[in-house]
Image (cartoon, rainbow, N blue to C red; front, side, top):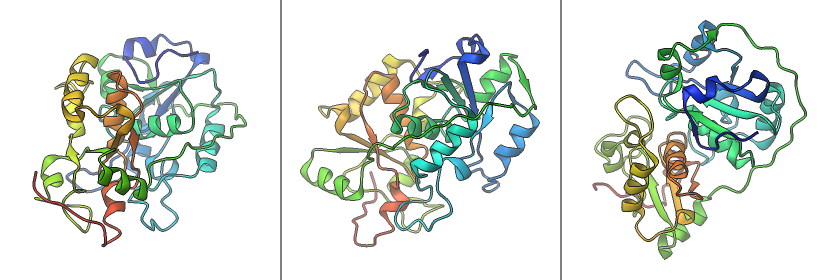
Length: 288
């Protein structure tokens, strides 16, 4: 069953038969003013979640935080084996519509889960537009019951992601266009709260992921997003657009927004800024 491959609204998601949908709770406290709280997502899930939702944690399930980063960024990609194991535990089947949500309009771990699923060749996965806040506001079913799902045997492989070498060559030749999803002050290098070097990759253009959402935390219309991204990427086809951010999480939001707008085929430089600056020989730019 394929209902959506990008976004799904709460009303449509709520109408899906329980046996045809896999809800995924990916709430995560990535970088809040009071400090990072990696356990908050698990705590919030234990208190209440979309009825039937299984848990996917950014640090535990959607990144490899065990091995040393070694240039892979602050949220290195999990192995295909690790992601396959999560899918197996969750009882994923190819005929299920997957609906993933977080508490930040999809801009944190939900978009990361969506991208990993697409990297694994899973097409029937969508981010819940408006996320957990939209679901609760609509008064849709929630509980604190841990779902009992029948495990399945899943073995996926990841398609090749963009490497630092490919990015350097593509930027030097002008073939690739790099979009940086961080907020403008971090892109310019005015501030850098997380990584040892401030600034951006020379030649990159800034597209803060927050610009994809309206005041209610929902994605802007496909038409509006298409106009905005088309103005930024110019003559570059979507296939030659590469996204990055600080650690490879929020950049997935821009990739999702482009797909939602019909500009399909862009890719992610997963190590992002934290991986780029791990090699001091790589150039750094500041300012606009």
